[in-house]
Amino acid sequence: MEIENVKRLLEVNQLKIEKMTSQIMELNDELSNIKLLMLNLERPTLENKENKNEFQDREDEDYSKIGIINNSKTDPNKILPMRYLWAREHYKTGVANNWVPEEIPMQDDVEQWKSDRFLNETERRMIIWNLGFFSTAESLTANNIVLAVYNHVTNPECRQYLLRQAFEEAIHTDTFIYCCDTLGLNPDMIYNMYNTIPSIKEKDNFVIELTKSVFDPNFSTKGKENVRKFLHDLIGYYVIMEGIFFYAGFAMMLALKRQHKMIGIGEQFEFIMRDESIHLAFGCDLINTIKTENPEIWNEEFKNEAIQLIKKAVELEKKYAYDACPQGILGINAEQFCNYVEYIADRRLERIGLLRVYNTENPFPWMSQSTDLSKEKNFFETRVTEYQTAGNLTWD
Ligand code: MN
Ligand code: FE
Image 1 (cartoon, rainbow, N blue to C red):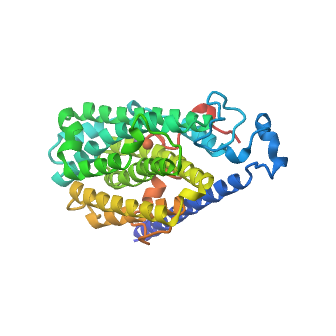
Image 2: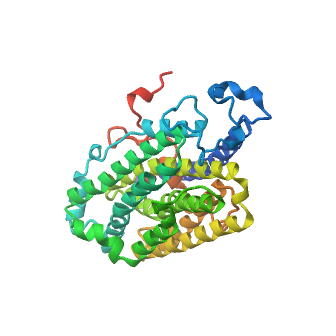
Image 3: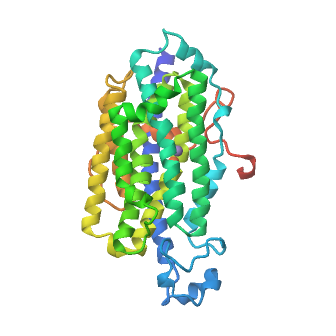
């Protein structure tokens, strides 16, 4: 009896903690936006010369003409002095989160996968669908960074971050090679799902279509129309691909892990999600900076277009969620995954300065706890996701 009471108390408290973590994450987003606003306010302008110290070697330049894109005065090889400190911060966080897939043991997963009693058909379908989507989505993202974004963002501290992100996408690509290998999956089948499964194909095509013009070798960001096209690309890859299209899958794989199923893969997804949350933060800071530096392009019409794109993405992601997991899994139904997608989309909208559309409550407060904040884990049972490389530890 006593034990039952204590257990219930623990559960209640756990729920409270999850709810609060979720709220803290929302506040964190708001804080990032405020920080960026402040950094922009502190920017030296011709009128505001007392701030010049940090930018000594640029003192003769017209600061109002210096921007994160279309800045002919940027020397891409000269990273100091730095201007966009948020880019540097994201770089440092990325490096501190170093990991490789081989560090995560897959023995239990292999046994569970091979046994015909451990996983039901619904769970197997969900795993295959997510491996199918992510295996190619990671390469699509990597190609966009290297072939499109890197070309047009000449600012050196942003480029340093983009190089780091490209490396992380290589690690993520490697994760799916590792999963296919260890589970003995047919690579032709997995890597072809983005052609053969309509709900996956539609997501990829939506992003590719949205960002097509930027891949044109003659594309430049000169002129209002082209800056808009470039923003489309950034919204397409950072907000929609990494910020919305990844999240039904994250929720599914982490829900499975919470039921102690396929813990190895679950942990890989956890590490990927932690990286992706930084990619997303960098992408939103980049978008917001371009907006502030080119206020004329962020008009009502374009804002509305961005909202419509995000709404369309939410529809595609819900369709994907139903397709990957039509019956839901133990204790979670397919609709809850869809609610989670709406909740996530609202947060993305707010992060780039737009109003939320859905006002859906977070059905999985445990998701924010999974990666965004430190949590207690049994160090001997599993590698802590918050583990950082030795050079980054602080000793107090
Ligand atoms: Mn990735
Ligand atoms: Fe990414």
